[in-house]
Image 1: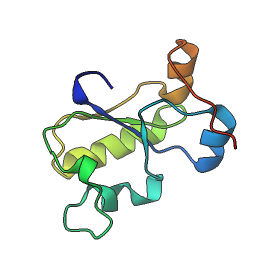
Image 2: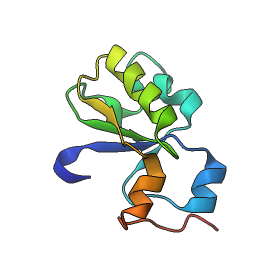
Image 3: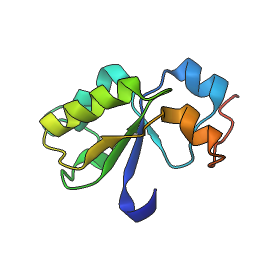
Length: 102
């Protein structure tokens, strides 16, 4: 993502398989985002090590991602935000997507 932002996809695996994925986005199931972001967690993901990094959260339509972005802000990610309209808005804007079916 431009300028070093991290795009986090919190959609379900079934949504990702059915609809496709955004190239370069990282996938964290919604129920593990907090553990991936917490540096003291054994499940911490180093891509979430920089609290100053812009983190853009995306779900299917933009509802879950708003909640995840708010949680990330509470965890210290000052530049956390969500993708308004979610994956559907991205796809409908003809931005790059890839097939995720095996």
